[in-house]
Image (cartoon, rainbow, N blue to C red; front, side, top):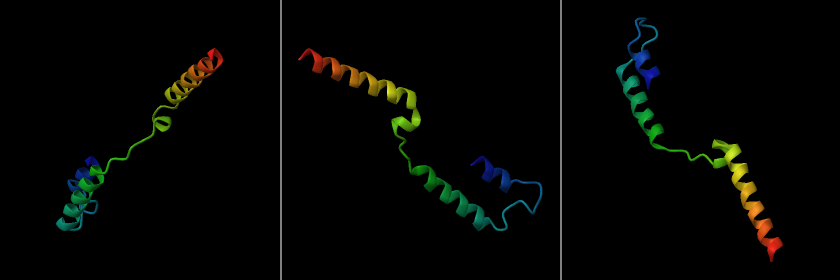
Length: 68
């Protein structure tokens, strides 16, 4: 959003939007892009936490299987 506003308010006319409709279109498509939320898996967000949790679960499973 900041980049879009900087382009619209640029001092150099060549860097600005050629038409107001172009600016409005970019604003409207930015809102739609922000509305779609992409979920990121735990292994991508925090791989260390993922492997710690996986290891703990496997360890508990091993202990339970050895006790029985």
